[in-house]
Amino acid sequence: MVVTRQTRDARDVVIWSALDEIADPEIPAVSVVELGVIGGFAFAPRPEGGERLTVELLPTFVGCPAIDVMQQQIGERLQALELVDEVRVEVSFAQPWTSERITPEGREKLRRSGFAPPVVTGPTFDGEELQVMLATAECPYCGSRNTTLENAFGPTLCRAIYHCADCRQPFEQFKSI
Amino acid sequence: MDLSTPVRDALAELLLTLADDEFVLGYWDSEWTGIAPMLEEDVAMSSVSQDEIGHARAWYELVASLTDDDADRLAYGRAPEEYRHAALMNHARTDWAFTVARRFLYEHADAARLESLARSSYSPLAELAVKMRREETYHLMHFEIWLRRLAEAGGEARERLAAALERLGPDAATVFSPLAGEAALVEAGILPDPLDALRSRWLERVGPVCEALGLPAPDGAAALPPDGRTRRTDEFAWLHGELTMVARSEEAATW
Image 1 (spheres, each protein chain N blue to C red):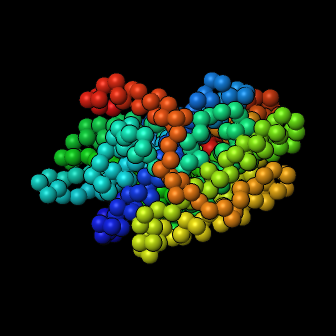
Image 2 (cartoon, rainbow over the protein chains, first blue to last red):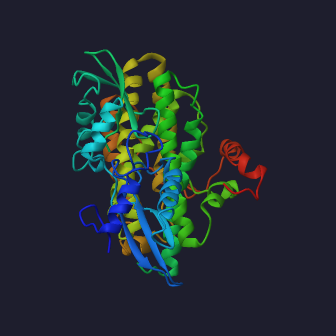
Image 3 (cartoon, one colour):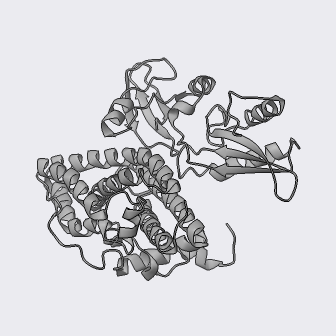
C-alpha cells in the first residue's frame, strides 16, 4: 500500500515528521515535504527477511544536481529512526513534480525568504501558457505585481530572476513547471 | 512491459539517440559559460546546458537498465564512432548566431519528438518525456526570442543567423534519421509516430517562423543522408577528447 499524506497511522506520522525536518539542499528555508518532492512511501517485507521502507522521490527538474544529496539525507534520517531493516529512496517520474506540489506552508516560507512562489501552471504547459505565467510573478517583499522577468534561467535550474518596479528590488521566483 | 530481444535492442538504440543528442549539445553549449554575449545569457545558457546533460543522464540510465550496462560508461567510455547523435551536433560551438540557429532548429525537433514520446506505451520513456517537455518549453521560448532578436537587428547579426540556418538546415533534419528496428517500435506503440511523420511536424513549425522573419527554412523535400547519426567530424573528435578527459585520467575511479 502506498501511503500518501491523507492516510496515516502512528508510524507514518513519525516518518512524515522526520521528513519534514529535512531541508531542501538548495533552498533550506523549505523542507522536502513542503517542497512536495516526497511522492509517498510504502513498507514491504523483504525476501531475505525483515522489512523495507521505500520512499518515492520526485525531482523538481530531471537534471537537478541535488537529487543524490536528497536521497542520501532522506535515507540516513529514516534509517536512524530504526523502524525498519532497510530504507530505500527511489527517484520516480511516475507522477511528474509540478509547482502545484509545493504546500501552502512551503509557499509562505519561500515568500518569507525572498522567493516568489511559482504561479499555478496551465494544463498543457505550452509556450503561450508559459508567456502568461512568466509575466505574473508577485514581489515577495512588497506584494506588487508590477514586476518584470529579467531571466527565465536563474542561479539553479529551478529559479528565475525578476525585478520589482515598485520597491525596486531584484528577486527570485521558484520557477513554475 | 515484456520486451522481445529485437524490440528491446531497438528501444535501447532509440534511447541512445535521445541521450547522445542532449549530451553532446549540452557539452558544446556549456562552452559559453563565462563568455556568452552578456551576463544574463551566461547564466541562462549554463542552466540550459545543465538541463540537457541532466536529461542525457536520465536517458543513459534507462539504456543501461535495458542492456545491463552502466550510464557513466555510456556517457564517457565509448569511442567517438559509437555515439549516435544527429549530424546537427557534430559542429563546434562557432559564434552566437550559429548557436542560436542550432538551438532554434533543435528545440523544435526535440519538442516534436517529446510530444510524441509522452504517449509511448513504454511507461519509463513516457514518464520522462512528460517531465522533460515542461522543462524544454522554457528552452524553446528562450531561443525563439533570440532568433527574433538577431533577425530583427539586421546587419551582421541577421547575416550570420541566416548563413547558419542555411548551413545547418540539412543536418538538423538528421534528428529524424530512420532507426534500425523503427517499424517494430512503432508497431509496439513505443514510438507512437514514425520519425518521418515527426519530421513533417517539425517542418510545419519551423517553416512559418523562418518565413515570417525572411530567414531560410529547412528544405522539407531533401532526402536524409544514410549516415545522419553515424557521421563523425574532427570537431566532434576534439570535443570527445575534452569531455572524456577526466574519466580517462583515472579509469578505476568511482563517482
